[in-house]
Length: 193
Image 1 (cartoon, helix red, strand yellow):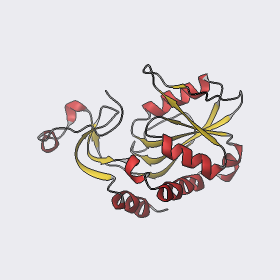
Image 2 (cartoon, one colour):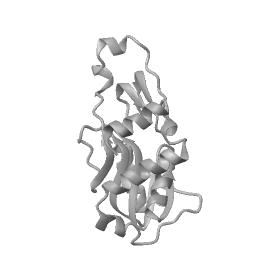
Image 3 (tube, helix red, strand yellow):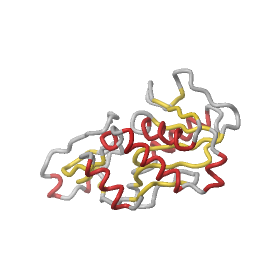
Image 4 (cartoon, one colour):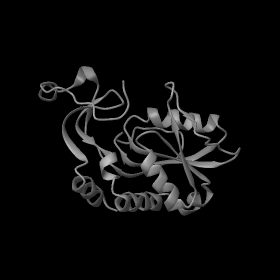
């Protein structure tokens, strides 16, 4: 899929929002990608996952034995990536503030894991999820996401394959432009600060 085709999917599902948003990373932006909306259509979610899978080199795809994604945002796309790669998909969650496998999910020692996110902005959540996966016995061999918003700066410590990279500007709280700061920030994501 091309960038225009992916953005068309986001627009068709009203998942590309404009305004003043407080991202889960703590940064501010005039754009927000509501991946839950773009993924609510199972056929669209399947198409996007297949497109991401095609970004991963074939030899690396063959090595993946499990897909793990962070809750909440990564659950749907992680599940669809499991389907696209024909491997089990599970997720890590933060019941006490730190990612961990729960609900009977287990990784066997040596499981080669693809960590799947919806959007990567700074990479912090991705690195935390990778740490939890490795603490549970898996070996993360690659990561992927629908969208990379990091402008290429996110270092996840493993090969990273986003479907597309979007460089909507994001701002630290003390660097928000006056025109953006003039409107209240909305926090549409699932994670509390």
